[in-house]
Image (cartoon, rainbow, N blue to C red):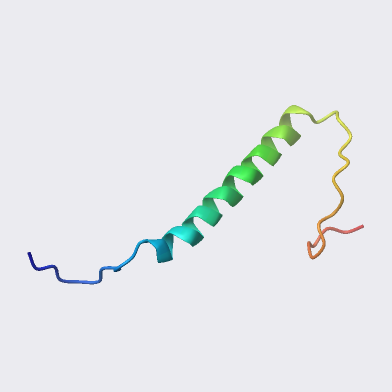
Length: 55
């Protein structure tokens, strides 16, 4: 069998950034769902250092 083109010898190199991106999407999805379903609840989450949030 002969393959031509670009093929990665190891998918582990690409798996790490993909898994990190998927985790980030899941976390922000849960945060947005929580915010949407509990709009009347006071949020006690402090601002994240390095974010562009105004204090």
